[in-house]
Image 1 (cartoon, rainbow, N blue to C red):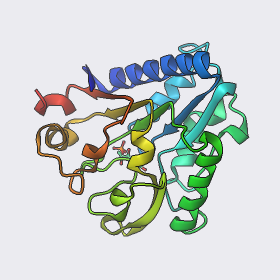
Image 2: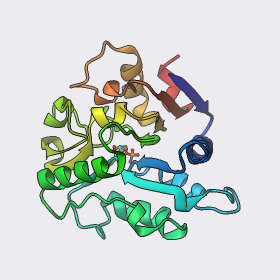
Image 3: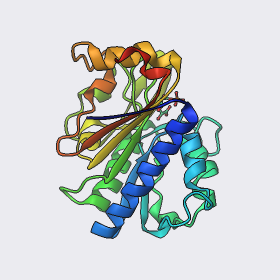
Image 4: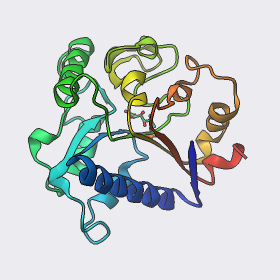
Length: 239
Ligand code: 6PG
């Protein structure tokens, strides 16, 4: 497991964007495309803005990108809470990715059918034994990642790549990639910043494995790389 600690959130985002751009170049050179699942929330917004900035990353081969999402809130795609809306505004609307290369979770359905459809869409793309080139994850203050929340059913899904379930602590439904999908990836990157998550990150790194309580501990790629991109504030407790 690789740790990269930058002094500020901005520098951590710049490092994350650079690592993603480098991974894309490698994947496209080796396999002709770059399949990535993007996180929602607020932390990665700067990463998406940097990637979309042609003065910083002029050579990204966008038409070879295949974009998926790590999770989605069950809201309309134009809702301010929608991860799809955030990624579209910050990135997809600014770069030349063909629309049918962007795979949105169709959460207008209820979460279970939406998850089944998304699992099928991934299967159609990757086939029986394919895998993501890259998965970008965040981490919440409760140790959740994607929409794998403490004590939810999705944590126990050992086969399907996508799961829809109630998240009682948020009184809502969520659709999320599962550990089988995440841990099959070639490269998984957590981008976590801010002092408010320092205690949780220390628990994820130092406490005995308890995925039900700290779902981020369930991310351990089977045959892939795990990279933590952090800022000093969040890394204060991991030594
Ligand atoms: C989401 C994300 C989620 C996010 C964490 C951290 O839908 O919210 O995919 O897993 O990464 O909640 O969110 P922040 O980056 O906003 O702290």
